[in-house]
Structure formats: structure tokens, C-alpha cells
Length: 357
Image 1 (cartoon, helix red, strand yellow):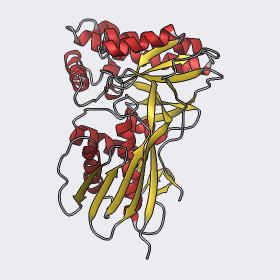
Image 2 (spheres, one colour; image 1 turned 180 degrees about the horizontal axis):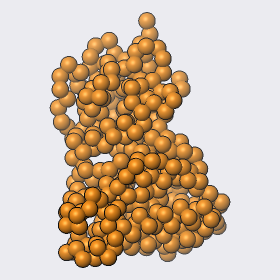
Image 3 (cartoon, helix red, strand yellow; image 1 turned 45 degrees about the vertical axis):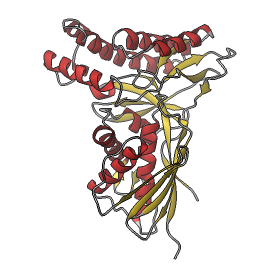
């Protein structure tokens, strides 16, 4: 009898606006992109997982009969996904996995979430073992898309050491063509928002400086927000005002003001998109970057040089995307304005899914 096979795809994401708001129960407006990670899997008759990261030409192997050991790099994601699926009661069997993709690592486009989600889909499909597809009615096997996002967030937190929120995973799982996603991280509601570019262009340009949550100041910023909430006596910065935040000691005052004002910029961006006011969106992108640079302090000289280059080329607005401390810059260009050759145009695309064949 032929062994069960499957292929799964999960996209990277670009966050249009709403940075460092997810772990503060705030608002964000990301969209999935066409580039992503694909995992092709074939079931095995034993209880071993053999994985090949094709782009790196690196391999990993683990047994489902033994607790997964912690590792570094892409292996941490693989082992974390296997362990967390097992804890969630998802049936797993042996598998041979081929991993490949087009999302640049460390570019702030969430290659990590794409890898986690693609692995979840492939392993769940291979493990269902009943001849029926694991994906149906918004569920993937025993898990719905929110449960998968939360599982992948645990992988980031507990296996990789990055205290991220749910933004990347929710954008990856709920992406829709021609739409951004308004995510409320207090309620975890996800609402598609049409992204009518009408000849305008969104592009990303790498700063040349690799970004990594776990080894950057990302975790420190998150801890600062927790301290600000304790001092303000609120559950999250969603419940604070700029007047209250301004009374905090530095740098907590700056961190809190950024989050509060960034939530408002998300609302203003949705309003601008609904009015087809793309110049206003450009101004909001630049305002977001100024706040990330001056208040949240996650920019770097390489990022600033990249923003300046895009603005000098005629961008209507530009900002660092992802957690900062390197990575890529997102810019909005009006019709007929040329962007730098090295920049890569991004389009809103579909969310994670199983591939036919």
C-alpha cells in the first residue's frame, strides 16, 4: 500500500501597521504575502521524523518515542511543533519532510511563523491516517486556526526563546487575497479589510541587517511593557491613556506612548483605506516609523539608511517591519514612481493551506 503523502504551504506576512501592539492586547493590520514556506511530507512506517531543510542543506532526525530535545535554528521550530502537537493530542506518525521556501530568514517577514504553520499542517495531515483530508470547515485536523496560532506561539516562546505575540501566526493562517487583516488582540477577532492599491505599490527592502527576536531587544521591550502595566495598575496598555503613560519613568513612558498611539494609527489606517486615501496611509507609515525609532527604539543605523533611501526614491511613506533591530523596511509608492531595483513588491495573498497533489 502506498504511503500517505501531503504538501502544505504557509505564507510570510507584512504588517502594514500596528507594531509591538499584539502582546499588548492592541490592534494590528497585517497581510499574508505570496512568498512562504512549503513542506512536503511522506508518512513512514516507523516512529521517526526525518527532516531536510533544502535551502540550508541541513537535516534533523528525532523519535516520537522520546521527548524532543531542544535545539537551535530551524530545528528548534521542528522539534517544538512536534512536541506541542503531541501535547495537544494531535495524532502523529513517522514522517519524512522536505522543507523549502522563499521567505528570507531574518528579514522581518515572519519566515519563522510560516515554517511553524507549514509544519503543523503537514504533520497533522500525515497523522490523521484515515484517508480523509485533515483540513475542513476552518479546522485542520483536531485544531482550529486560532488553536494552531496559539500552539505556534508556544513554540516561539518555549522552544525558540522569543516572547512573541500572535500577530505573525494569525496573519499567516487567515490571509486573504487583496485584503489586510484587522486583528484585535484582546478579543482575537480577525476582520478582513480590503486593501485597494489601485496602481499604488507596497515594496519591502532589506536593511542588510538580519533580525532575530530571541537575540535582539525584543524580549526586553516586552518586559518593559509589562512593567509599565504594573506601575499603571492596568491589565494592558490598551487600557492606558497617553496622559497616564507620560507620567511613567523613562524609558517606560516612551514604550507605553508608542503602543497607545500605534493603536490609534491602526484605526486611522483602516479609515484611510476605506476612503481610498493612499497618501494618508503613506503618512501613517512614516509616523509609525518615527515612533518605532524615537519612542520604542527598535531601529538601527542600517534600517535608517534603508528608510532614507526609499524616501529619497519617492516613497509616500516607509517604516521598519517586524520586531525591528534589523530586518526589512516597507514602503508605499504612488503609481508611476520607481522604487529601488533591490526592493521586492509584495501583494496580499491567501493564508496557509494544504496543496493539491
